[in-house]
Image (cartoon, rainbow, N blue to C red; front, side, top):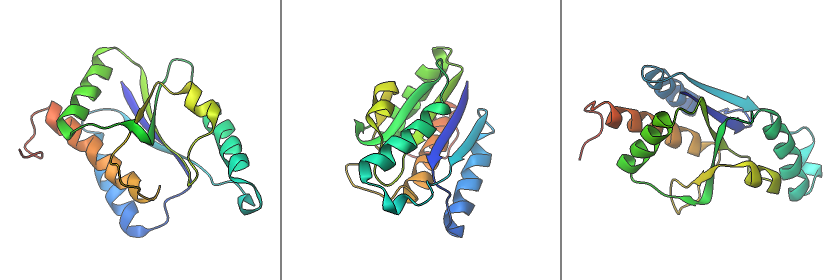
Amino acid sequence: MKIKVLQIGKTNDEYLLKGIDEYSLRIKNYVPFEIETIPYLKNSNSFSTELVKQKEGELILQKIKKEDILILLDENGKTYSSKGFATFLQQQMNAGNKQLIFLIGGAYGFSTDVYERANGKLSLSSMTFSHQIIRIIFIEQLYRGFTIIHHHPYHHE
């Protein structure tokens, strides 16, 4: 199974990029992994929130294949412990899914069409994080999940 993180907008902060790069390299020891970025919309500050979500949604859906499993990082999604998330990852691998995509949306969330296409929603916390910060938090948890699956001593109980 291949895992992709699909995200809206480029990460600009060097400290975030370093962490994302480090954990991405580590994840690749366990599974094919990539991060794909959909650029921010040009002149979006002149658009309504709904129009931004709609236009971003159209760009997102162009990147998703019919057979892909799409999980939205969403504040109303299911929460897991790190071990529970590792179990979820293992279940996805056992199901024989070809590609699992985790979607980090833009500042306004997702369009109705993206919600309808999604196979599930995942929440990392009941707190709100910027869509920039959540990237490193999520990728670290993804790495942690694979270390749990493979009994690597990274995760402590």
